[in-house]
Image 1 (cartoon, rainbow, N blue to C red):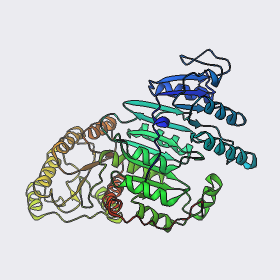
Image 2: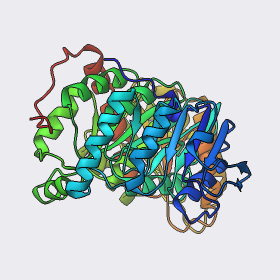
Image 3: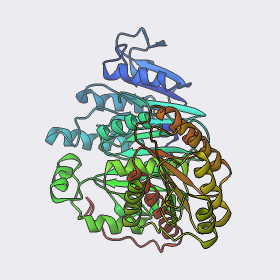
Image 4: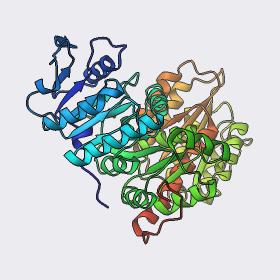
Length: 482
């Protein structure tokens, strides 16, 4: 399924900001400021009737003063002036536009009329339009970072390697929230798309383009409505055959559906229909923003997903039980310990330790017990399990620092994926978590969230197989064309 080339929108080499301002609190000023913060290196032409210098760039007073056509025009002026600006851009040879303000299809009869006129202009002049009524576009490709948005902050981007995450959203507010959480949790969020009204470009268009980018490891979606569900499914399958596509659908309940209809004009679909549609498209469906963020954390580290067989290794019975409950209820397989591994543990652990799955090393376990148990796992159970979920409750009499070092060190030469949860009073939490994450071990405060993350990752291999071998049939879902 072909998708449009969105490089001029997400990686333009030159842009004009129509309505640029020098106040960061204005829409035009916010766009200019965040463009600069992103480290954009291309040609920038601010357009403001007053001219002058705006955020270090020489401004022109009109669109006709832009000169050589830019790859992208970003429009941040009042709605009643936008159609004229679009026509002027077309006359200047500018073919790609990002329109941030609203006042179109969402704004009653006058807005609907303006929306139809915008479509007509696009058709007549061969324009490609992102928005309107959106919060902007961000693509922090390390080779060519770009942001045109009035969201409050930029995401952290990927520090190294092709592990970036893309978030494509039909809600600007959720885009802002995901950026905030990505910064707080160190998620390598690289690209953020606020779809807005989607007069030309829908979620699937951005998904197809970003899903083909080598710097993107997984795509996260927030969806309330799909214009053409068959096209969406075809593109989603193409992407999911290579990398995870995780979707949160708003409006899965009656009351939520009515709210979504008011927000985006969505056609209400019931929960079962949405689930079947996602499965047929190879899409990993989540049902809350919390789950979407857990999937983001997991797939940033393990973009190919993991298997379902989990070993729980804990130094406390209660947290191990909670982790086991969540793991089993979410579909993970807690297979018994292989006999050779169990024999080693019984020989090396205190008699009161629990040699089962979960393993309980007892509260006073230090790095020697954790290290021995991990070594035994590698020696005797490397083919029995697909992931190790380790838990350390930090009692007052144990120094957690060597335990963290042991777990991080074991992960460096282990063929098994591992995750780690720490509980209790954690005075060194920030440093400990940073060391674990740097060693490739996702770290959690909550054992249930760790198990839930592992279960989300374990769902992807089957979905990828569906995407790779599916016939192309799509489970029925009502869309706005029906």
